[in-house]
Length: 330
Image 1 (cartoon, rainbow, N blue to C red):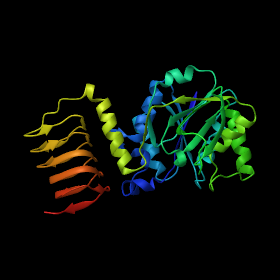
Image 2: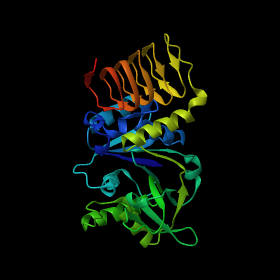
Image 3: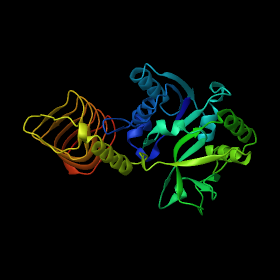
Image 4: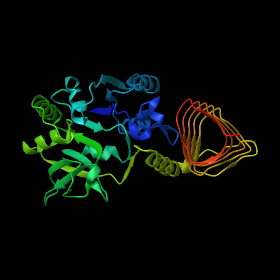
């Protein structure tokens, strides 16, 4: 079993944070988005990973090599970036005829028992019912639960079952051939080579696929979604929360505070993540993500994302502040 994780995107909706780091390494609930995905897959027993890199891909490669030295990791650069279908296709030389694959998009966090999924004997696509599926790939099934088609961002969806970016494909070699044919024949949807087009070709060739439901699926593509995911994951992990003890400071769980932080005379929480070696003094923080090596003084922050190496003094506001920024309102 091999995993393909496309992490080549620019992450424009998370600007300014993705000016200096790839979206997959933006922190949420105490660790990067990508780490949540990789940890889930490792816990399911998977050790063979293929990462499709693009924007700031050297940072992802360095992070994986340093944080996960015990997994087999292959890194492939997607340039130019022309869709998820092309990203998966780039891994074709590393996939044998006997391989099963998991495809997990690198900007969504999922909470599911993957071991259960891996025991099933057919190809499966993860889905979740959504109110407005027009911004997603959409699955249509027949009366027996088999997938009839998948459509990328349809203007008139035929179902509300959205693809969550998690795929288990047993016919991996056949999928690579389908993607190869689409790329050779320039078969594009919305200007890109989409994975959904390759999957549709498999279905047309008689491959039977079903869906599996992913109720806990967290899209981290924007600031609001990132903060929502941070809150949900902090609450989920609150049972094993640490009892923090800082000078003259009130901690309102759930929070995640990394090592070597200096916090005093403050109120922290709920739903706050703070990176390592950060200083917070005379401040109130709630519903916020604060990066590493930052300094927050005399500030009241809510619904805010503050990058690493940032300095903020004297403010009561909601902010979206990137890395290496200094603002002084005092």
